[in-house]
Structures are given as C-alpha cells and as structure tokens.
Amino acid sequence: MSLHITDYNRQMARQRGFSLIEVLIALLVLAIVITTTMAMFVERQKRMQAASETILAYQAIANEIELRRRIPYGSLEGSGTNFLSPTEILGPLTPYAATVAVGPPENYVRPVTITVRWRGGQRVERITITRVDTGGGSLW
Amino acid sequence: MVKRERGFSMMEIVVVLAIFGIFIWIIVVLTADMRTWEKKMPVNFMTHPEVSAVVSRLRRDVQDACCGYYPASENEWVQGPSTLIVETLLENNTLEYAVWDFSKAGEVTRIAFVGNPGKERSRWTAHGTPTFKILSFDVEKGPVAVRVQAIDQKGKLAIDQIFQPRPH
Image (tube, rainbow over all chains, first blue to last red):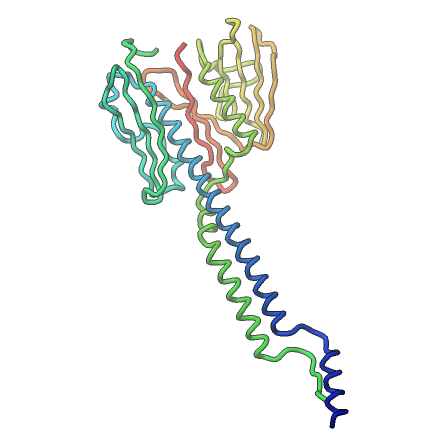
C-alpha cells in the first residue's frame, strides 16, 4: 500500500504543466497590460481627433478673419452674425454653429469675435480680432 | 493507469471561444467611435511640415501682392487652377513674380522671377503634398482674394484657405 502511494507522489511531482494558480495570475497580469494599452490607444485617438477638428475650425475662422478685416469700420455693426466666408471645410463637424459677434466700440476700437461651436457646444474655438477706426476711407 | 487522450474537450473550446469573443467585442466597442470619425474626417494635411510650409509661404506671397497682383502669365506659365502667379514687391523696390506650380501630383514648386523678361531668381519645391487647386474669391472693396483648396484621396476637403493682398 505505502509503495503505491509513494509511486503516485513521484508521478505527481514529475507532471509537466502549470498549476491553476499560476495560470490565473498570468491571465491577470496579461489582462492588466492589455487593458492599459487599449486605454492609452483610445485616449490617443480621441486627442488626435480633437486636434484634427480644431485644425478645421481654425481654417474656417482664419478665412472669416480675412474678410472681416476688409469691412470698413463704420460698417462693422451691420455686417451680420453669420460667416461671410465659405464654411464647407466645417462639413465634418456638422452639426456646428459658426457665428460672429461685433463688440461695442471703446476708444475707436471694436473687438470682433469669431466663434465655431460643435459637438453640441462641448467644443468651442474662437478668435477675437481688434478693428481700429483710423479715420480713413476705403483701404484700397 | 490513466488513459491520456490528446485534444480538447467541447467545453474547453466553447470557453476559449467565449473569452476571445468577449475580448473582440470590447475592442470593437472601444474603436467604434474612432472608425466613425475616420470615415467622416479628411486627412489632416496641416500637420505635414511640407504642406504647412507651402500654405505659409503662399499666404505671405499673396499678402505681399501689389501692383498688378495676378499677372495673366509669366514665362511659360499661365494663370489657372493649377498655377498661381503673384506680383510682389521686394525690399529693394523691385518687382518679383512668384509662380506657384501645382500641376505635378505630390509636388508644389515656387519659382521666383525678376525683371522683364523674367529671370529666374529662386526655386523651391515641396514634396509629399496633396493636389492643390487655386480659385479666385471676390471680395467687396478690394483686390480679388486667392482661395486654395486641397482634397484628400477620399475626396474630402482637407484644406480651404482664403488669402488676400494687404494694402500697401
């Protein structure tokens, strides 16, 4: 009888493979590594996406600035709150809101704020330019 | 003696497939937003240094434009959707004619001429660029503006910039 048990123990000791605990620990470590990597990847993609959207918004804002700089100072008030420049570049940000706000005059200076909002207002980019009344007529 | 059978049981295979399935489902869910966005957005050319160099230099040339602004032709180049010719004033009060050639795919060349007939003064080429298109954009009370567009391989508008000459 004792010979049979010793034989059995020897057999068990010589068995190849991993125990359940070892496998579980390895799986746990692997799961942590994969989860961390995936989270980093997703975050990177989100930030790249945000940067690309910002570049599109700033292109539209830059175009609007070019036109708003040409409007005579006296006509700024009635120049409207919608973009005068084309906004096709903002297509991927649909739905978006592109607006222009002309501030009140202060010592011959008026701020003109050009704003683009998208993602339900969660993302906003704006630039304010300063128009000065130099007293002249047409720039050209 | 225990009979050692090779292979896996049905339950083991089902469990492994279920774990793999869950893993793939997690990846698909996490990347769903990314894939939708990739379909919608154009290629981001402006992060390419050569492209942003072209746009910056072109902006400077158009903003410095004066006198005739956009001559109809210069040497063998003719003003058109793939060629922009701009007349600018140099610091020494001489006129320079900048020819922007967008006709070759993946390349943008700027050739500067001075004098009449035009003598080539400098040449600069940017590589790895998208195909640009030049349009005119009418502006009230001022010289015509230049509208520069670039479309990516998916046909999406990636660059759309308007530049105007500055008053001198």
